[in-house]
Image (tube, rainbow, N blue to C red; front, side):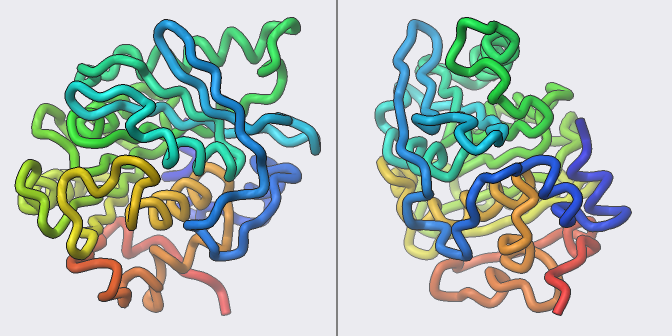
Length: 278
């Protein structure tokens, strides 16, 4: 499952061959990460999970990667519905755990189990349409900690903890990770997120601090968190070469984007990932 890390450090992740294998005919969005993607979205609300997914999955013969999502304390997926819909419009299947206490990531990881079953079930609309080889964990606040905890699952390939709470151990991860903080977050201070980033020196880790963002800035449509998280997910799960240069290489776009980010850092392993080839 560590395709992303192995490719990154040995040959460059998201190569053309990998993109052909993982994206099929999922359309490019260029670099317009914050605008809706090419897919109409359906939402299936169930007892344990809410699934956000392209309405016509597999219509081009493509497989759809998976994002498992964890909510903040006391929250439900509907609080983040516009962000999760946005990711689904990009071609992802989002399995959002309905629990308001997601920290241990049990329901999040169970979302993978459900999709494994439905992908194999000829009577399911998900049958043969789920890319189970490319899975991300993501979440906000307590759910951000859960995104780290979920990444101990060998089926998870990358993690996106947004303003993550403290009850997680990044030492147990072995996937690339994109930590996001809010400059004005008084609930999860940026220093706490930076500490997670520093403790992730064994994997490619990127830290981004959204300028002016408070703790609730990522709810709803994700605000300024929406575009960079989408770019990260498209790179690691879809092999989208348009997203590579946003994070990697000496000319990294986000590295120099002081309007969006009040803080930015890449650890040594992240700096070793090649940027866009001229």
